[in-house]
Length: 184
Image (tube, rainbow, N blue to C red):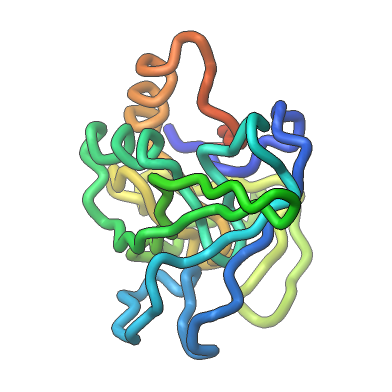
């Protein structure tokens, strides 16, 4: 069973989080391919949060951001298809810097959307925006974490990985993430 790993918009994090703008234009964190270009590290995300404010552990965008703790849980669950780059989050309000973050490139895409059972609009041939996603789980071949070929910003996570995250965070202190259902 699989889920979509996405941002939790109802999280206790009310601040904005802005992605870095300082890497080469040809660099893509959603293509599923290894980034071979040299990138200035750490990647700097900015926020309007200030010292003492809660900070997210996960943010999916054109550059996925994960806290060290969130990343370690993925690795603990067996996920091994990640390319990571050190990152920080810097407050535009008071200069506070949050360390122990990583910009994460999820390697690999799998074409497994079941269009006959999904609700979607076609963005361009072969690429879709899903209102309701159905996948053929057999095509995923038990992959633990991957990007969906039919919508590359979507990160799909196996239930065993989700279980590791949930079991390791019984107090639900990890912020910014949720797992949405997929029809299977």
